[in-house]
Amino acid sequence: MADSGGLVLQVCPGAEDDAGELSELAGWLRTELLALDVQAVDPLSVDAVPPGAKGVAAVAGWLSVQLSGEVLRAVLTKVADWVIRNDREVEVSYGGDTLRLTKAHGQQQEKIIDAWCSWHAAGS
Image (tube, rainbow, N blue to C red; front, side, top):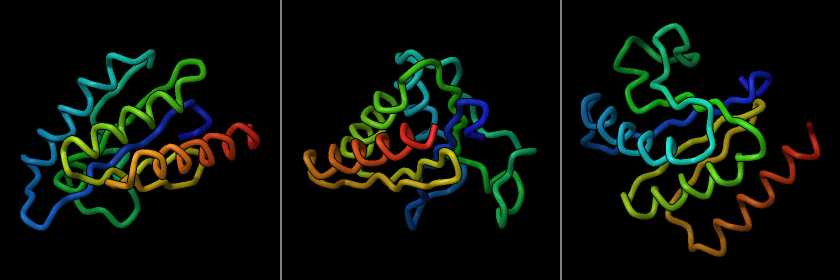
């Protein structure tokens, strides 16, 4: 996915979440991400089901984000803000790496995002 300039995001399910709730949460996150300078933000297709996932319900809450330019940091910052406001966790996959964004303190989250972006900038 990284070769095409894309991220895969997963709104991590809570104990009581069903596929409908995860899809709704992902829709809210999608709306916020579309306000950024990204090419596209779409639900992950059934054809792109991650290894080990089973069926359509397995991709509920998953988004594919096609980046344009240098917006990785802006997307991660927006996702981190969304995580805090919605009391959720989101896994971000990019270039074979996965970053789990949680309700960490703002400065902690910023350091984590900075390090992850630096790692990927160095690898490009």
